[in-house]
Structures are given as structure tokens and as C-alpha cells.
Length: 319
Image (cartoon, rainbow, N blue to C red; front, side, top):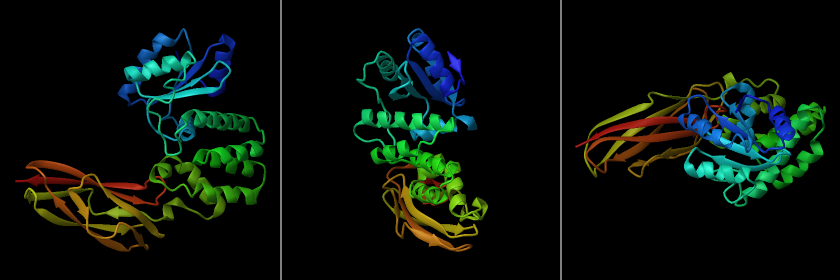
């Protein structure tokens, strides 16, 4: 077992030993990750195993490449360095799929691996992701990968590939092209992307607007992240209100308000644009469907890079 080797180091070791290799994306506070580390011992004669702690800033790019923060995640490569599979989890089925993939059997090579950009044909997605990884490694060595990345983007559009094309253009001194790809990168504004690619989005915004300062952007403020609803009656709607304020220096866009249960209904608009210091009050109805303590959630989705989701917990007591 190896820990913290760079991609090139583990690839060179695998090629020297003519064995496949696994890069396991893991976190220190992840019990299933610890289980997987122990279970993977059985495969160390078949493959070179390398554990990567994605909590370390220098390893963040692995999660950005695969497009998810899911842990543990096992990426299996052939001895030549070709991506063959990505398998999620530490279950018996996960281990079965990891072993099959090490042995070159693609039967369940995408077990539980799902991201916003994957298509129905994950094997084709893996081939494209492999090209993206190769482009990234070549760029690290100073190569101009613009043409390769242009071809990749015709096959698969997702933030990390666009970011690499942006970074490549900037490195080659093509400022107008870099701004074009920076703007394209910012079109991926789903909440999970605003968190996962936070550093890249800030860099892109600064390229478009050198005066950009994240501290001066819109910022959502709520009066409390908990709402207590006492003396609720089963099947009787109880109204409550949530005040949302833009505590930032620029416009704040609230793109959606979601709830965790049909027992919570929003009676107003789900989308709002707030100027600095502006507030809006959003009305809800909660209907208890059983007696006792009930916990539900409201999620406020904004365009704040790094913090796009604010959760409010409903703590209800129903008689």
C-alpha cells in the first residue's frame, strides 16, 4: 500500500512492475474509507494501491477531475495508465467491482459512480476523462494542450475540462481566449459546482474582472438556522415566515428554495434578486403528518461561490 504518491509516481511504479494501479480518493474523517483501506490489502499483489487524502489542498484536483466529493472513490488504471473504471463505496459489491476492474473485466466498472455530467454510457465518459487527465498531466510539464482540449470539449462538457482549456489559453498568453473560457466556466452555476470548483471560479472571475473581490459579493443572511414550531396539530397547516437578507455589497440571486418533505410548502416565490441590505420574507406552511418530534429542512440556493446552499432546520412538535 502506498500513501500520497503523485499520479506520475504511482503510474511509473505500476509500469515498472507491469501491474494495474488504483488511486483511492479518501478523507480522514470517513469511516467507510478506513474500511476500504483494510479491504484493499487483498489486492496488493494484483495492483499497486495508492491512497490519496483529498482533504489536502494539493489533492483537491482529483475531486475536481472526477466531478464529485464522494468518498471513498476508487479509480482503476491499466498498467499503461489508461483509466478503466471508477467505483464508489466500500461495500462487498464495491470490492467485487474493483477486483473485476483490476482483472480487466468491465462488467460493473462504474458501480454507483454518478455525477452531473456522466451520460448513460459511462465507459465512453471514462475514455474522455482519461484524455482530460492526460491533458492535465501534459500541461503540468509545460505542453500546449489547446487542440486536444478543444477535441475533448466536443465530446464532454463539464467544468474541469473547461477550466483546463481556460488555464491553457492563459498560460499561452491568449488573453481573449482565456476570457472566453472563463465566461464559459461560470455558466456551470449548479450549487455542487459552486462548491467543488470554488477556487477555479474565483480565478475565472478575476480574469474577466481584475477588480473582483469575493468578500464584496452578495451574501445571504438568515435570522436563525433553526425554526421551532410548537403545538402543531396533525393534518392542520401551521404558517411560518423566513426572512432572507442580502448582507453583501453586490446583488444576490436566490435561484431556488427547496424543502425536504411535502409537509412543508412554500406559498410565495422561490426566486428572488436582492440588492445590498435588501430583505424578503418568504411564507411557508407546515403540516404535521404524525404526532411527536419532527425534523425537516429548507434549502436556500444562491449564486454565492463556495456557499451556494444555506439550510434551515424545522424543529416541530405535534400533538
